[in-house]
Length: 141
Image 1: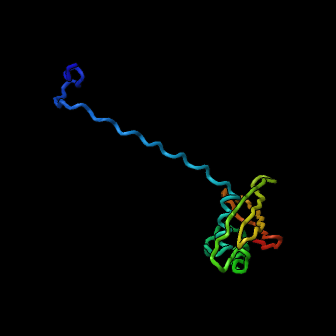
Image 2: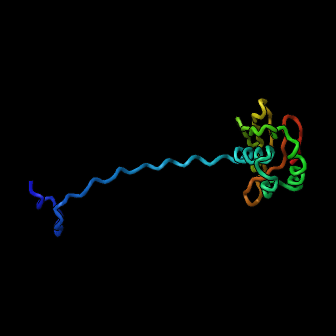
Image 3: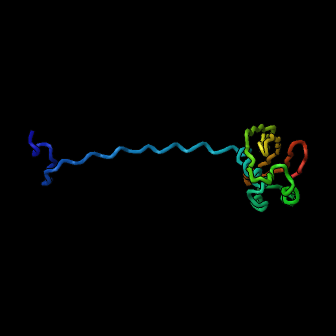
């Protein structure tokens, strides 16, 4: 078989084209977390001391931010040995349009703690925390 017949018209280079590298498939993006899952992680980061309280600016309603700032330093999620708490599970329900009531289990310091919170969607479609309870203790954020 002559290279003249396989070569494109007008091409003078006798070399054959090299192999095309295999295309790498891109990983599919993960589904975005639901509002209550996203907020549970954010709230846990603040209550454990991994993030400052001001990280919650714009994510709480009314005086909730001030209350959170007052209560965050004394939560059971702050472990002196430096072990970070872990969000084990988080579930939510929507009792009304624009409202999510959620609960989560958090493993911290060898114990499992309960965390419940309420999110409300504002006119700007952003979710904000209206209330939080930890292990039966109401933090009212």
